[in-house]
Length: 222
Ligand code: B12
Image (cartoon, rainbow, N blue to C red; front, side, top):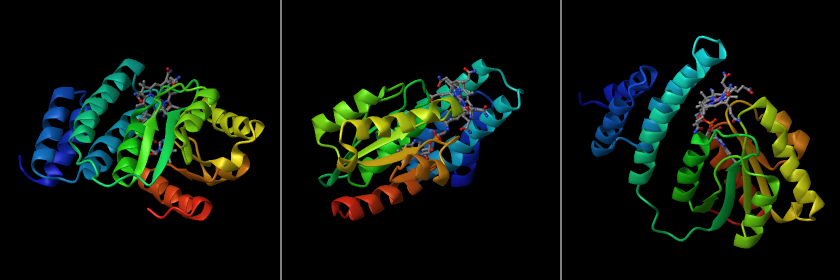
């Protein structure tokens, strides 16, 4: 198997067949053949986990199977992200990122971390299930420009509002750009309602939102 499409489709099929080893092997092959890392992630891994998520949502798939699929994605993702060339330039901005309190989905934020870093934004990835105080404390400690929160559950989405309200209460709202993301929930309506500076359900849209806000609010051009 050698061509790009076969490798990408093979990765997708492997996740859907819960074949973690096969997916990782194909990710390694894809990287060694010079396929663009984001292509492997966006066209191979993400649609596969979305497919499993839809089956889970329709009640056709039990949670343990979804977890095996997610582990397969995580293994391949870690390999791809670790093998991505690291930028040689100095970052022009800093961001604190994490999944909100109560939310343990963290595949998306790993991708955001890697892509933002490759584009000149240093990311402090706090991980998952992060309380409001921790986002703000880290941002203050590191002198961050952006705070980014991720939520994938209808039940945790509200925490994105809790974080921005906490910033306001601390008198820090204007100090930071506040971005929200995560596949299942955020929208422009939610972004407007809570007063965030940008939203994204895809990493490249997120990067555009970050660039725009950095230029407008901080005078930083990436
Ligand atoms: C994988 C997965 C899991 C894995 C998570 C593994 C992990 N380490 O992350 C496991 C199996 C553990 C899991 C658990 C659960 N899950 Co789940 N899960 C998913 C699934 C299939 C994919 C999520 C994902 O990783 N997508 C791929 C990544 C790359 O996409 P992403 O997160 O959206 O990130 C991208 C963008 O949104 C953006 N982005 C993300 N964050 C941010 C932040 C910023 C600032 C910016 C700018 C951009 C940005 O960039 C990323 C890259 O492009 C979704 C279905 C779906 N289609 O989303 C369900 C889904 C989110 N899960 C769901 C549920 C219900 C659960 C559970 C409650 C199940 C249960 N009964 O226990 C638990 C939740 C526990 C908890 N407290 O969080 C539901 C949520 C329904 C709802 N609306 O509330 C979904 C929608 C499935 C469904 N159809 O029912 N899940």
